[in-house]
Image 1 (cartoon, rainbow, N blue to C red):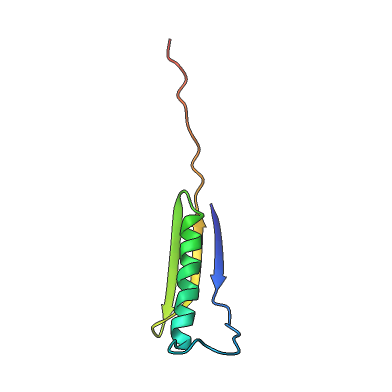
Image 2 (image 1 turned 60 degrees about the vertical axis):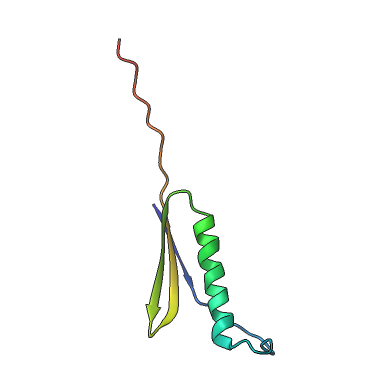
Length: 74
């Protein structure tokens, strides 16, 4: 089992598009991170940690399932 954690990175912008708050920009970024993690998994879990109504951490745990074959019984 493999687990990786992606911490929220600061967003460096010189300006925010008119009518869009910094919170909305941050929300779009973490939503895209969650989409990327979910899209990269075949089996596993994406966990979002929230503190004070803010996403602070995204974790992905990936499981690898092995095909098992039964030997033929004579």
